[in-house]
Length: 298
Image 1 (cartoon, rainbow, N blue to C red):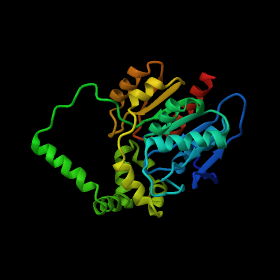
Image 2 (image 1 turned 90 degrees about the vertical axis):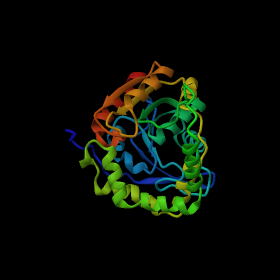
Image 3 (image 1 turned 180 degrees about the horizontal axis):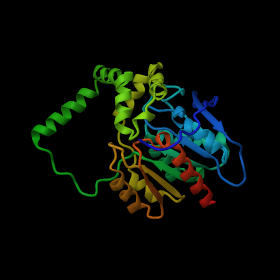
């Protein structure tokens, strides 16, 4: 069990910004200041601004902080589109330009980390810095994979073809969004299971009931692979902080961290006793590391 006092989790009222005809939900904490750039917090797959509730108020005591629901998630609109890192890159870039009004330090968890990396690498005018927390995204294969056996290749193609059918994807979606399944999944990816509360489960379940949520789910799993992480890192020029929860069963943190350092050796990194979402599981420690690093780069 983590020995850490829970950071403040008070709700902060949000508002909407219209982007390309779609309502985008975001929250803001803290006041603008001339000492440090604002922060923009970007959630992972299936999460929302709610997942940053333990970080917003505390970080807002020192910085101006924004958290945003990516299109298709949380309280943002869920239109029938093809979702991709490029789409969210453009959403975040436009939000920084139109709402924040100056370059921001992007902090992203999991899928939100990949989207934030796309912004920092491909829209550098928007990024004053980048914080990746158990970030997702594919690397290029350094060695070609061996050709699978004919039987395995046939089965693999068959499974992919099956999942492309709406009725199969819908059944998977309906099962995945059950509260009991959400809880079991979270308990697998959090080291401290006491951090998996009824409130957290509800915050992830609620958006899945929105109209269009299934189409978002299906689109994301059918979207072609985006730009690889190594190619994005080759374009990156801003300071980079990486926070890794070593107890994450989905990511080999040390191995993946070494890949990031291979392509961007000037990064700063910390390995933490947490799972896939350290910002929610050990918020005080994460908030402290973010605060210290932000102050060190300006």
